[in-house]
Length: 166
Image 1: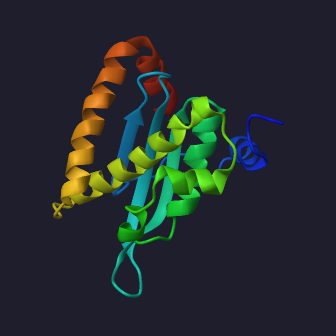
Image 2 (image 1 turned 180 degrees about the vertical axis):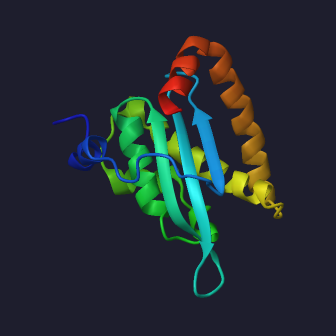
Image 3 (image 1 turned 90 degrees about the vertical axis):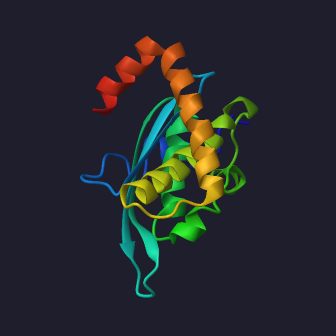
């Protein structure tokens, strides 16, 4: 049996929503201390017919392995068109259920994608001076500490990643 599901390989070979959004409403960037993967998600938020904020557009740039790229692609599919409240309920288990089999050593990629999405929403709330839910504030504080540790531990790698994603 292959270590990756067919869907993982499809999302890796033909990622959905890859790239940058010009003038995004929010950007989420996270990294993993163990493997050095870096994910960046960009969101464009608009109102739906009910006046709710939705993810109108979402794109990603990921510097990482097969699983990291595939999971980044999958989270954009899961989030696009959803309300902010729906997006904030997406968790790693939802991503894993949608993408299929990953080796145990790659499960952390789903957590990374979930974190990047939440960071993009945090950034959106911050940019537009909106109230930020307490749970999102707490999660953001933890993620910022982790990102700083990744950047310190993988300085050369992070510099290469920044050139790649620029």
